[in-house]
View 1 (tube, one colour):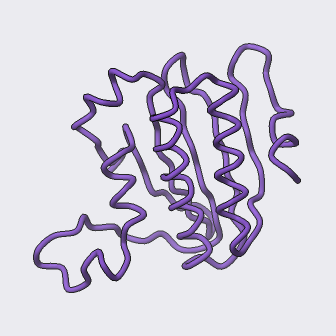
View 2 (tube, one colour):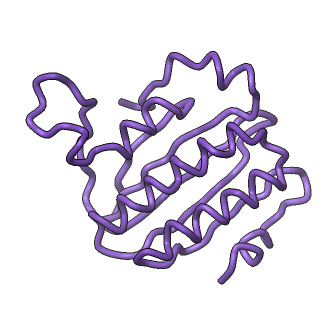
Length: 158
């Protein structure tokens, strides 16, 4: 499936949903980035926000390739006029994330960038698990003002 095929689930009211299986391996991140770019362009999301969404999505897909047991499903949906959610779901157990700190033995030079980037750039994010699958999701706002003044990123249900 190419990125154009993913846009067939448009509800006609502006709440289009993208729900696709992302290929495994190196092509997965490239596929996801292309899909996110097209989605953001279609929904007139400003370039700086779109670049952040692309980066966050790519990091999540890279985590699946590195740590999960199977392919990922990428879902992008508009929640309201200004809020969008991106979800990456894969087979695997829930994991606990801790923000990097001075007391951590493993530094960011050895990895751990994906969720740290998410914590800094997303409006909100969450990790959930159900039936042997883990879902990492984040929300972003389609507003330059909200994006540039966002200093209160928070873990939902955390």
